[in-house]
Image 1 (cartoon, rainbow, N blue to C red):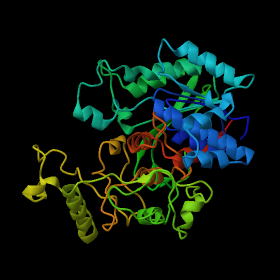
Image 2 (cartoon, rainbow, N blue to C red; image 1 turned 180 degrees about the horizontal axis):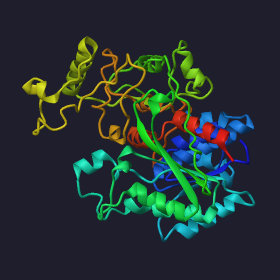
Image 3 (spheres, rainbow, N blue to C red; image 1 turned 120 degrees about the vertical axis):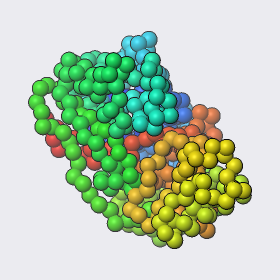
Image 4 (cartoon, rainbow, N blue to C red; image 1 turned 90 degrees about the horizontal axis):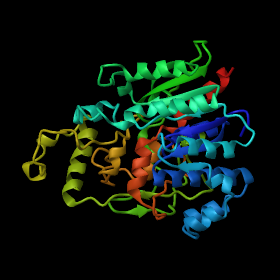
Amino acid sequence: MSSDFNYLDLFAGAGGLSEGFIRAGYNPIAHVEMDQAACCTLRTRMAYHWLKEKGDLQSYIDYLQGDVSREEFYISLPDRITQSVINVEIGEETLQDIFQQIDLLLEDRELNLIVGGPPCQTYSHIGRSRCPNRMKGDPRNDLYLFYAEFLREYEPNYFVFENVPGLLSATDEEGNSYLGLMQDLFREYGYETEFETLNAKDYGVPQNRKRIILVGKKGTSTGFYPKPSKCKSDILVKDILSDLPHIKSGEGCVRSCSMKSNYHSWLHETGIRNEVVPVTLHQARTNNKQDREIYKRAVELWNDTEGRLQYNELPERLQTHKNKNSFLNRFKVVAGDLPYCHTIVAHIAMDGHYYIHPDIKQNRSLTPREAARMQTFPDDYYFESSSGNPARTPAYRQIGNAVPVLLGEKIAEKLKENWQ
């Protein structure tokens, strides 16, 4: 990894955007994230990259197989690896301490780039529709102010700010555009900004996922936006999932899976399939008999007519929710015969009804590993829990909140081409 492209990841989550930048040759100095499980995921991933660079992944493999505990694994790592992940909520009280920790990690190096974006729930269309007044007084609305403080402190050449399309229409209590307020503040701190709405499916990601990518450059020049070239993939969703063990509801493994030897070349070309490190977290939720019957009906309808199941069209005995006309599309099949699926979101951690596996014989929702593949996370990427034991729910949440790795990589590559 080049020392000329040192970056800091703010509001890092599980590290999807960061992984893309690492793959493009950038050097992570630190990640700042408030969620404990996500921070453990980041530490484990930084350990993977350090061990891979050394040419010895055996201790990583031993950990994933459960031969050593997380504590034992972390003790074997240099402090600079584990300390590069800063588990803290960014705020007025913590800012100076975060700066001090980053300065220690930087040593005498310059910070060239900042990436990341604040939590997006309050800007999202879905969040605002569910609770129209939720933005008022929500401190998350103003997290961009702290993001700007990092720009003022470190003066990087560029920054990459990611958020949901709802940011385009989000306003404060006075009706001011949040995006406009952000751009004005960034300009005040010496950065011109340009943004685009990018759909991940246009850049090789097998998922229909739109995001605002705002890029800032120090100075007053314009026309610098690093928009990647669009590319199409001929792989179908069913091909992305086909080499994973076929399992039914409640089946699977969290530690190590026996993979099929035949797989689509795309999985190798994108770096998803790995023949060295065991595949983890391919374990399906246990669904009750009623849900499995609904899943089967949903898949049959899609396979026969490419139609979507409406909840109020189910037989009365299967309609157990009181409000039958809310969220009519609460059961949705991941289309196996298309080159992309619908957007993977954090709600997948609550239930899998919106992410039904396309293979009717398996009759279940997606596993964390399958969801991770839709986000183009490599199979050697392990999603941690707070406890240190494998767990589906925190993995689903981290995956649903992440930036697709391949999209991050495409942006990083284009930014490097344009770097001035």
